[in-house]
Image 1 (spheres, rainbow, N blue to C red):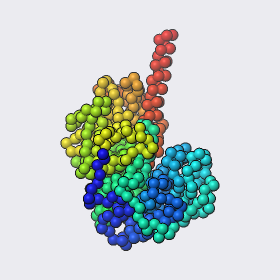
Image 2: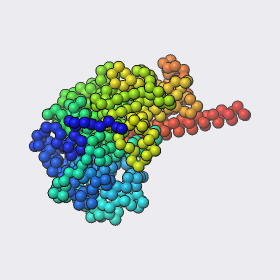
Image 3: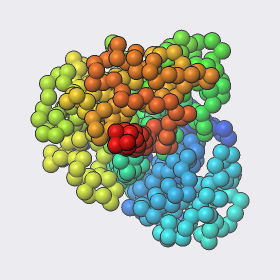
Image 4: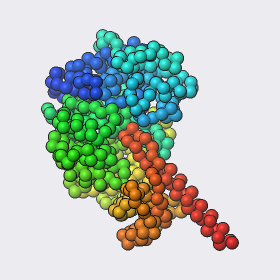
Length: 533
């Protein structure tokens, strides 16, 4: 059985909006179009819930949300919860195959989207979907300001907002399915992670308390997309604490810097590259209003980006989370402040590190698979009982698939198990080798994977104008690393294969492993031909 949040916690998303003390006339959410107070946001949620109810949405039905960050998106999240409907979050970076696959797999009966979002023509992409991808859909709903059509691909287009009186009855319940996140699929196929209302609301309350989003002057820069757990957890925590949420539809360093200074942003989250770009746009001026910032490391050059952010007054702390236990699950502190892992925000969370093959518990400091028992844990993988059974044991403990070790306080995240390498009989994190190569002049980024023959292969992206020599890089690795850790090949590439996840772009390790296997196989074949000749 999964742990649950007890007394003193909000148990539904509607309850989250009234959980902490807040001034109804204080700003709740700001986007490029408007600012809503907490009272106005509550009214907007009721009107959106009324619009959804008029479209036939009720408890248990699935509603796809395909929107950029903003007031409409937040109102739709809370409106779906009020009706007991399940919000299916769709990444704004997704295109036809990904969107169609999600709609088909979730059997969503309604799609909430908008016209006029410059980077993406949502209606055009939707119209091009095969009919079999949208057979369950009954209608498309759009905000009034972008409503410029009555039909789309044969479906009626309805106003997102309706009569608030139609949604006066709050049908949210603690255990009702609430929303789905899509996993990135960097090491396996993407899955749909289902959470219930108490899980989302309770975790939000824990995060708000832990990082001070319940302070009277707290302001969050909502720049990470709300469609993924990273952006969603931050936004829900801000709602729990009554903090002002300032939304960005897409990240731009100069625009973000201006928003931080104008709104006196106190809380900021993002990927390591975002912090680097923000520092570059700072003009050398310190961001004095920011009290808490946290980052997820997606690139081997993370240390460079975080150092640049620190130079302009930010102190980003490493974060750990996943779609299954939610982002901001734990926050790093002390001497490990810039490493992933840390101490869970929930006092109820229990951690264990086990041998990936035998399940045997390992002592502090030993690397193994991280197991988590926490109330923020997901319910199941939607319509995928076999994957759920593999991930959650009989006692309700989640096998994360992450390589980690327990520290004196909390834990240290090392890598995905699928990314970890068995070299020379030892389990090795690719980050150890990447850090050595990254330190060399002219290296902009590096990714290390292992091939089935038990050797490492490094892929290196050079800085502009730099010329990298494989022999030189391998020689340096030989000086710094045990022989079994030295990459068999170091290959210079223009860029890495990327998958767009809801939490930001991530490197496709699976594709890199395929490239490594092909490279070594080709060289093996060539060597065989030379010997035969």
